[in-house]
Length: 328
Image 1: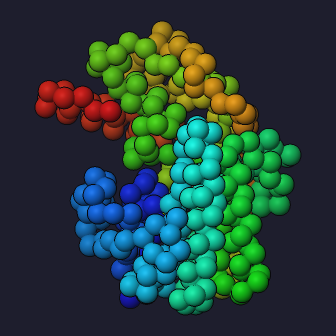
Image 2: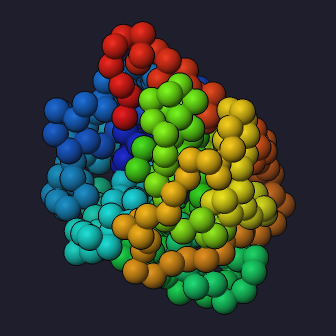
């Protein structure tokens, strides 16, 4: 039986990946910082059998101890301060966790067992002010946020350890991927949750920032399959994972509100508080390499993704109303 260690297991991707690996016969460990995280119970409910091991991306010795405890064959580094907007307010911490956290994991692998296969969660935010459209594995990076800058460091240090120490270390440059498990701070979930509350009469308006930003949105459950496939190859390489379609926030609003029988123009207001100091205007990925070498394809369309998120949030808010409380 293979054993995998996942950092960031309580996040959207961590949950989907733990499910996928468990279904494929893996023993799965999740790296957690302290046992009081309320989301641990969510992991246990969704993926029974996952074990937790203490560790912190800020603490080298704890990562070495975690690897020695669970002896993984694979390590998936999904842990990060992953909300782009927050990274502007916590730039130093973002650099420490999202950037230097990667090299700490790689050093732990080099110390404990160089045969461990390593996956780094790189991001389309590294492209930032794009040099070409669509973006592929050869497109130069120009990040526009502390998060994007930290991800560039993590990406290149993974490449450096692969070339310097012959580690099986690869990065997946994942474009935006969403689901009903997405955190409420992200614009997609903020929209679908807002739609649900407006539909049920719980609020009237939804305040957002830049409606013209364009993103390549896919389904998170599809994207974790690509992560796993990367570590099954004979040699480590980096891959762009994307749908090849781009949609604006305004289009997301149109699909989400229409699905609930509403008009977004009647409810959405612009709030400058949600504008970023530097914006990424357009991202669209070219996943040709992943399709041809990994045999990977997305399975959930953009309209279907938005619809399932809206339907899920309506169900959650209806259940909350019956309990006499309100979901986030």
